[in-house]
Image 1 (cartoon, rainbow, N blue to C red):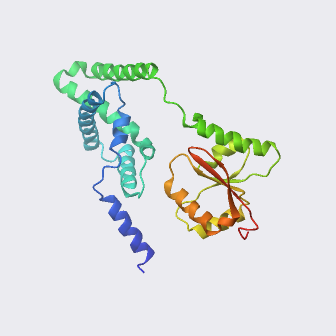
Image 2 (spheres, rainbow, N blue to C red):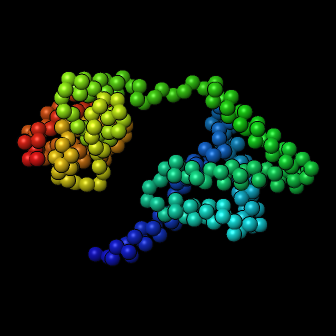
Image 3 (cartoon, one colour):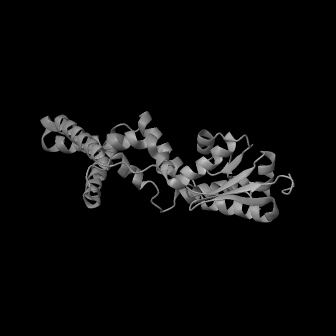
Length: 256
């Protein structure tokens, strides 16, 4: 078995030089989507990324030791080395992306019409903000996942049991949300542990019900189902709809 340190370095090295584009959407999002059509936004992003690269490159060339430069480089390396990725992890870099875009536009206009560089940059920034705000106000917001009938039905079922004085402690993918709207505390379905460990945790935490389904967490649900299958006699399905299942656990039969 390789030493932990050497294994960690190899994993970090692999992710650091992975050819996958994992955070390109973060750059697009930081430059916003001012147009309704995908093609128009794609063309817009091609130009804004060119300006951003030029603006950031010029700034780094002139200010290589500035804190913003050092922070940006270190944070980008940290993101690249992470095994997982999510656009929100790149939020701290958004100010740098936007600055690079505006600086690139300012430098380009200064090269053509030096006296209008700041004005043109300000007009672009204000115009982009107005366009995105107008589009946002005119766009119907997407329905909340928590307002889906299946979620509402699950919440009502659990809340009614709590109101009737029943002790309910749940294991679920979104236990904090369910606890806030039903009054039933619980724990999250833990990934990357075996079914036996799931059962032990449920026993240790006094879990009475396991909630499966809903917002995608396929591997967690698979592991929980395997845990239930270890002692099928200890679990009974007490609720089901199109998206969710609730399995009630008998602690005695589960060997708690």
